[in-house]
Length: 114
Image 1 (cartoon, rainbow, N blue to C red):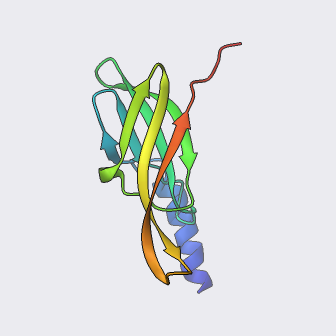
Image 2 (tube, rainbow, N blue to C red; image 1 turned 60 degrees about the vertical axis):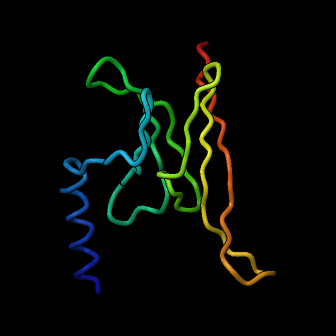
Image 3 (cartoon, rainbow, N blue to C red; image 1 turned 135 degrees about the horizontal axis):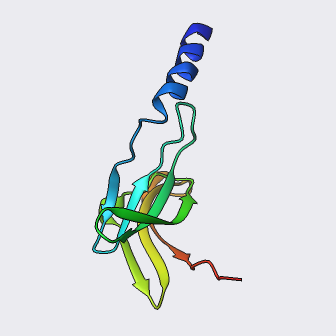
């Protein structure tokens, strides 16, 4: 078991610089990537970027959500400079003893210049 853990850590160190993040969601101006930080990383970190010129991207925000979300059914809107990410995830309802789908929204405000 320790051999596998050591090999995993070493592989993570060497593969991290060359590992690419694939766009999970994109519209005209924005992309959302599922961020990978390494072999032993936790779940559900997403990176929101804005397209700049043709090939460049500007990092807007990195968000961490406790649940894996379905980005294909998500919607990212820009209203007066404020981004709203509407998404859906699955949660377990203990009273009904079944899995339910929950709608949620994250509001992302731009950084203010000092």
